[in-house]
Image 1 (cartoon, helix red, strand yellow):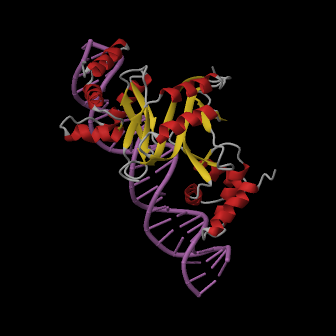
Image 2 (image 1 turned 120 degrees about the vertical axis):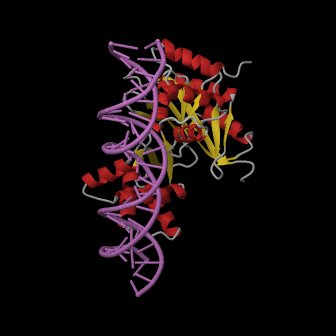
Image 3 (image 1 turned 180 degrees about the vertical axis):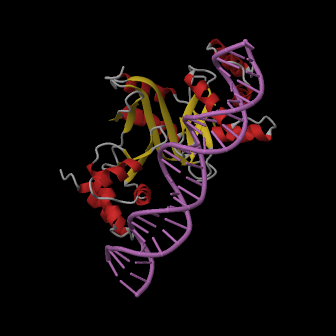
Length: 144
Length: 144
DNA sequence: ATACGTGCAAAGTATTTGCAAACGG
DNA sequence: CCGTTTGCAAATACTTTGCACGTAT
């Protein structure tokens, strides 16, 4: 399986949308593709900077905005005032997160029954539901 | 049923915890008791001010902090950068929220199957889960 | 009387916006 | 070339903190 598939697809979809391949865009997309969990904008900014691939912080936010609009990344809010982003590699199989209140560790999880229950709620809500955010909080194995 | 039960219980629990009945504390608690949905700190502050019960914004935040710690209110993050708070009237029957992306309308919902599915996930997570936050997003009946 | 509570203003943090210069196609 | 993208700095928005004064107990 090709590990760089996502960044390629992202750049391709952006191009199709009339977006150019600017330096910041490529760097941020490339960075996101290397992550296996969600990251915040400031984190992306400082990591890229320390790797010698500096990018303006505003550009990071702008790139993330475009990616989120194209649904190439998922925004997530863990409740600490930082918006995090994660590459959407397999749109059909999405997952959620569980966060440790003590050490801040973030772990993903997926559950079919949960999704089915959510789908039912969504269908009976009277809303045209576009998405849902689920965050579990507690103490991780190491901290409790 | 007594509609002011919550504010009384809140003040009582705070007193038991060694907290005094300061003016800001009473006003914020009283205000929260009159709401039927979640509210943000700034909103509480300006509403109280326009009602002629002014309270310092910092005090609002401090009161909310104490209440959240004592689990008398629930924090919730709807993803728009504003932390909202809601009185916890019946700890055993909690609910979640669905938000309209267009008009910002917030509606509560509760679902037993969803809770059961969550409980299972929580038990198998390896975490000692303290709580969960669920937010559904979409277009409400009027906006879609 | 004396700790705790409050209000104001200043600081802190995350994010957004204005604008001139750089750059992709 | 020309419109898009970028980086910087300034602006915004929410929340937190420091500190002197007020007040509940």
